[in-house]
Length: 361
Image 1 (tube, rainbow, N blue to C red):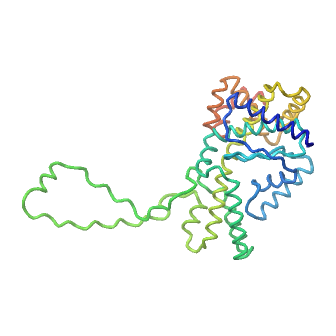
Image 2 (image 1 turned 60 degrees about the vertical axis):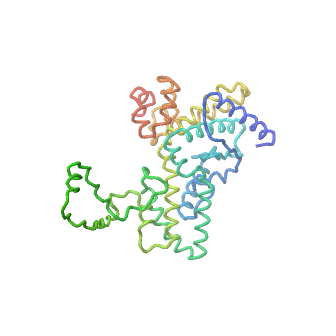
Image 3 (image 1 turned 180 degrees about the vertical axis):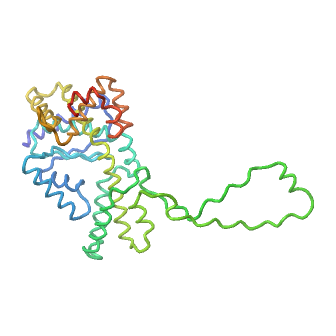
């Protein structure tokens, strides 16, 4: 983008942000940054701007690069929730595209602040995943220098193989299991027994309380395998435990991203369309170009008599949010945004009428 376009984008972004606040969107501050396309491909492969080194991310990078070069994938932006949120816009986008992307990011930011899954992780981790991921990468680099790449890579292989095996109902920072079983509660107060103990005569000797037995490990079925291994594996060194816990923390961060993809992308698409529609300060030519991009983003993968092999989450999410707002109003949409994930969203709000309209079956 030219310097003039950058200046115009900055002005458009400021006015769209004000419009978003006037229309009721609530979000943490968003830091926008222009980045080259090559950097965006790296982020798409690694998931974060800086992340622990592992060969599997290289495979993802090659796959993403091939899809990008063949025109099967185009990245307009990458946004990381937090306080502040971080949003990277491709510097090769047109002014119209990046104006739309700004509005899209604000929709993401509103969703991330208000959705219960996103806000729960924000509360646990403090909203600084980029800094935490960079710290993880730094510690792993230190371990590579100390014990060698082969040893560290073997531990990373094991930890990343278990990446999905986290208990999303648990807190990020968990205490170890109690070492002893709980002591049975004392008998309830009994007035007769109290009076009996006050009678004269010899009393039975008081026996020392028995030590409660050790609790089994684990005391219940444990789904949080990364945490369990890091806490209870007997032959692991501290740097190995750190790697398992780092992978667990990043896995918990990505869980709401995957669990709310349809909702999140649909919500951002709904709001970028609505914000641009209300942004009467935008030139008509820019608006038309931006809406053309919107149409490309939210279209289904197939049309006419063709059959789609996958569902475009932008298309399905955008259509569902429009359907909810039309039938139940914007306040209901905000309520759904707060309380649901994709499972509940589709189960509770994809009705037969909309499914037939979208040709899903």
